[in-house]
Image (cartoon, rainbow, N blue to C red; front, side, top):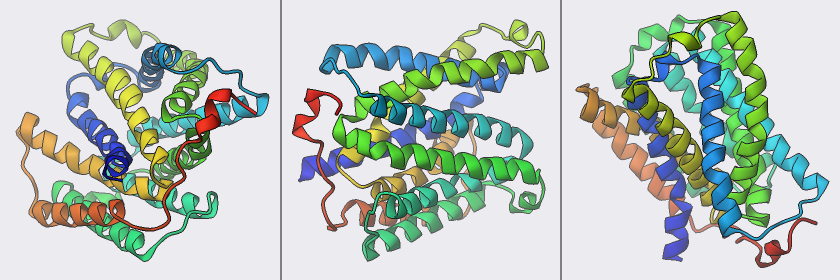
Length: 312
């Protein structure tokens, strides 16, 4: 049971890796056009994940229905990242940070409505605590007066992005349980590569010469490697790994740690300071995560032992 709870908390590592993107972005993400960067991210992630799957899992022959499910996850991924990039460009930092908190809410809603998961009182209270804690931390770091600015279309895109990632999370659960987190995230990532690839020529046509001005410096290369290897391949795998041992609605609470980790890393590596609500908000977040992760509701179904036989 303790081992299962530890593995169920694997999404916390994913959230930490995504939080690290805040620091790494200061070192080089802005040098590459956003949709091109998204393509590089998933292509590199797929290049890391696919050989690992081939070396560690049985050879499978998936039915057409299963490939459609993997393809559906790829579509959700593509929609989530592209709308996130465009929405971020149209809004300000305060709006982007606060709208991120909507992702766990969408995951919980889809977990309850689409997956028939049970939202226990302890899980609901824990999620509310984590939400309040994260909002308290962000309120101390960003200018709340800037929330009224920005672009309504950009706000809508960020909310849609949050929903798309929630759908990627919830609708991936049946495949994670039938096969494994590693296989599910790998095939979804591989199938998303051509979808992102279709967007690159469009972006480059709109901004000719953009790639020619990209400096191939160590910070830029390091930022791309971090984005592809850690925040994509490793983080997406850890995110799905939690659903081998917990419900999607339980995994959702770990997403709240992402902006908090970003703040901590900004203090450690960028010399930033924390706001007055950081300590209190952090405590609420920890209490919320603890409440959800120790919920003794109905245990999640473990991965099927006969999954190695392949698709239906």
